[in-house]
Image (cartoon, rainbow, N blue to C red; front, side):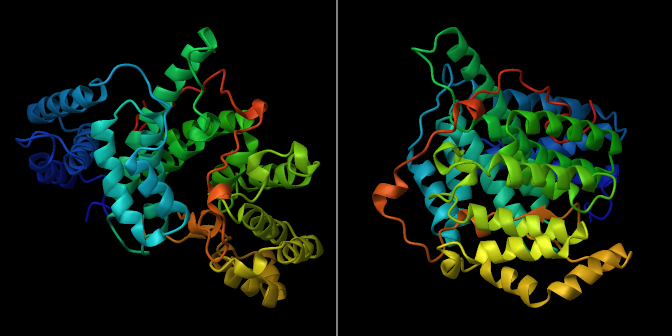
Length: 402
């Protein structure tokens, strides 16, 4: 009901009241399930207030839940960039090798936040697991709202932790370390917050988030070509910018000698079919750009890569394009956007914008990696290892105009 009427203040208040008794306000020790309900309750409380409710209980509930969450977040000193907690291992195994464990991983990461609230990877994994599960849920599954709400909260927390650690590293690089994924955090965060802003119909917030996204693209274009490119593909006012970004990354930034390439341009454990995804997505952009021959060449190149036949999830989508290329091209070019094909990586959502999927790239599928290969984590090239001038977080954590 709320997703059909996200400006209905009565529904927002009802849902806040539903989640509050299951939150950290419930007696007993903190756990991940209570954290989840606390964040969701805060979302609906904030929505009710943004929609004009001035009930005194809303402010009191926000104050109480803020204190509970902050008590967890400040329960350990400093910032940790260590990786390898049991929950981290569950997440990595699910995200990259055994997708059927995704909901076990989601619960494990929430519990890990209670134990390690100052750990950047814990915050990032809570962000990522919710983006993954929300993006790949069934078309009309209303609980995707909870994925994007919880993911949005942790995405801002992750950026706060990583920024603090980077500042400490700048002052004393011998004692502190940068978080190795620091320059990709913006796109992950904006994906959650923009979905919520779109759902709310907050055009001002969407414009702010797009500018924030552009700033992150300048910091690490090789990663943010995915997040910004998928958001812009279906938007006529932004489509050309998305195309230009994909063209620059595929044809310039990744088209360099292998030994100089960033990890984002390579196929490695944890992103086994990265280049296959990049090439097939670029082919969709090219078809919409009225370049049939170039698109056909990109698809042919993808099929020539050594692990194409074990790309179990992505290969059928590639085959559909290859076998129906003239018709797909014609649909893009007929002037009727209503019959445009859904681009590779996106999955339709009943509510909010269509969202990107993760499995096609990150799951190993039938590719077998050795344990040595799995444990060989490549650090980013130095040019993509530091944020430096951090873009301003342009909205509230739940995607509303400030």
